Amino acid sequence: MSQISREEALDIARKSISTLPHIEITDQWNDGWTIYGSEMLSDCWYVSVSPLLIGSSVGASYFLAISKKDGRIFYSGLVGE
Image (tube, rainbow, N blue to C red; front, top):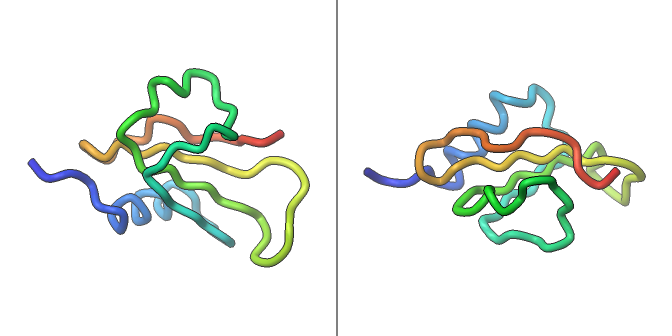
């Protein structure tokens, strides 16, 4: 069975969040992400959604952790508050 690709993970994110103003996706965990239970979020695509296209934002960003194995969303919520 093949793993979920980066593009498939983006499609899952788009279906989960109707508006994606600025999106970043990686499969590398960032130690700066503070998420309860993060040790359970391995082997995932990590999608962060920022409310701004340019510049910096103050407050939370939206974050998804999508399983590379089967596309399940393991985490969906705000980070960086």
